[in-house]
Length: 600
Image 1 (cartoon, rainbow, N blue to C red):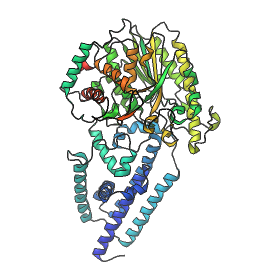
Image 2: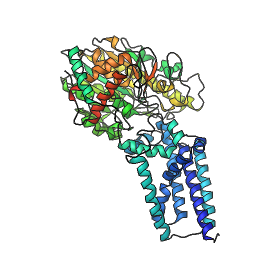
Image 3: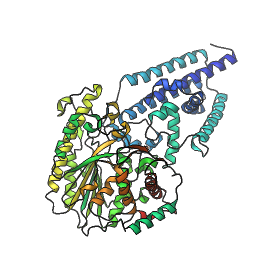
Image 4: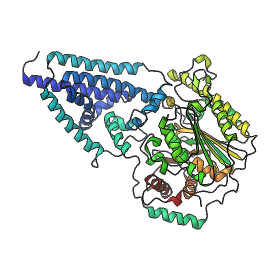
């Protein structure tokens, strides 16, 4: 045991720094960021990451007054968090960030569909923990110090100073980091800055839910309204409005398009063979996840380009959000929202009524339950339940929105003997996952074909739009397609198919081979000859020139050119007007212009 006070102090400081640095490595590594990026990081960023990583230790010291005990507790906390973070990354497609705190209940419900992972990554995380424990044991043997009030007081002061500095750097108006540092391309920011910095920045992002649009001027929108009125671009609409059924199908994805897996197209064969079916591909906000983000874009036509949060239903003001629900309500529609899984996931039990749905069927009690192996809540049953409510509907035109569940991950729920699709490509550890996914997708294809067969006998005019919410979580781990005009993996891997069918006349020329999720509803309304708001008209006009627009500012124009949103690029003013209109409804302040979002 060391007796010299100065040496004790030096050993104590060294032990604390080594363990906290190790915890920093562990947390960043759990986000699948190689340790080499941590070691190459500049010293200033290293220090900031360690200040954040030290928070559990400092708080434990404030409570216990014992350095050894506090180090031990912080090791336990960091180990548990790192393993959870790794699971979130594997199953959600992105590491755990502050916005995920809004959806702890959702996460628990969703994780029940997945298995606990104990692979080489978890073993490596535990090996880092073992190193930290060895350091702790050596320290405890060299410096045997009981709990003291002096230690507690010193650590309270240290914790306050640490938190004050972090507040200034991350949460105050003097923050040194931009809002939404991580955005949706999380890997590069984390490689450059470290996981802890990105997590702290995500707190600021969550508190500042959407970005302020640079140069925003409401007068430009007033002029746009006048211009639209003068040019008379708005359709007068049909006297009899068709019923509209909107289906956001969980993980509906064409792996032949995204990853050159031919069996992916074969799994969707029943849909593609439906007489009169219109099909194309649409980009969605996120890669390999983000159902609630896709719901938001589909229902509101607002782009996630300027939205920072990952769970809009839980964090944005949905009661003051302009959407297709309120728009169709103003035209005399009756709105119905349906989802068979937990009613509280992403606060849908509050968001759907706030958007204006009159009928809301959420939760397991409303739905028929059958399984395919261990795969639950089949599309076929969802469609049959929806048809029951559709046939019981009032005389108003109907707007029905259904979010399915069947194709949800993980993709190791069934034994391989139950797979009806077996791909020829060897994708290593993901081969079995792809087989189960495509087997489930085949059932979805058959169920949708049966739904259309039922609706084809209806004497009510009806339009059906179905689109996937995102690609499967493994999409980033298998080779992506570079065939055709696919110019960027970040676009290809967030592309899903959309399908439109109707028993009434549509202008099919409106629909393009490639699209954006925000554009599908405005395109549908235009194709049916229905009235269009200024907002929907602008989106349709923009779509002609720039049909593909991603949430991270990458666009593909009508000629297949890849461009980015900047003042020196083509179509800048048209894209800017769209973002300004979106900002007007997001901000919903004194300059809010309701005439942008209602029918003439």
